[in-house]
Amino acid sequence: MVSTNVTKHPGHVDLEERARRLGQGGVVVWFTGLSGSGKSTIAYSAEDRLTDEGLTTCVLDGDNVRHGLCGDLGFSDADRAENLRRVGEVASLFYNAGVITLCSFVSPRRETRQELRRRFPDGAFVEIHVSTSLEVCERRDPKGLYRRARSGEIENFTGLSAPYEEPTDADLVIDTNEVSVGDAVERVCALIKSRVSPGL
Image (tube, rainbow, N blue to C red):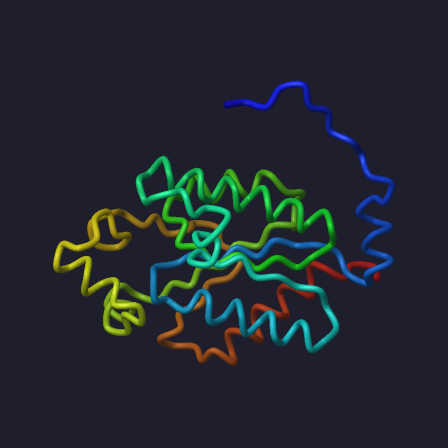
């Protein structure tokens, strides 16, 4: 269903003025990678670090949004696309509010991620590929999902029975089998701060 009889109302505070008042601009940081790669661990650790430094941040995590905002969706291709569309809408609202928004989603389709990037001005969308290999992710299996997928309990599981399309133009690539969480967070935060504070 498409909404009708609606009008978009412009706000009184534009992005530049909001950035001046907050001391930061908004940015959307999109972590993509297989389940168990370390996306959420890095995102939450980066949030902690940036908050300590006085910046305003928020994490949108794949599992968490499916407890509320996307709780009515399954894991078909159509539902996954709708899941990310909704998250993109929320991230856009947070971006316009000047928030550093850290999004942790498998988001397996390259075109979907490119569509998300196109929603934002140049430099406002940062794609981080947590490129940890399937073998390492499956060995970790922190939620037991790979085990259940291998036994047939979970269908269309990304990396096993459903494809994952690696980014070709990620802004940052991190393999958590080779890089510690601390080093990963340093790299992520340095990249974020280069995007949110121009001229401030």
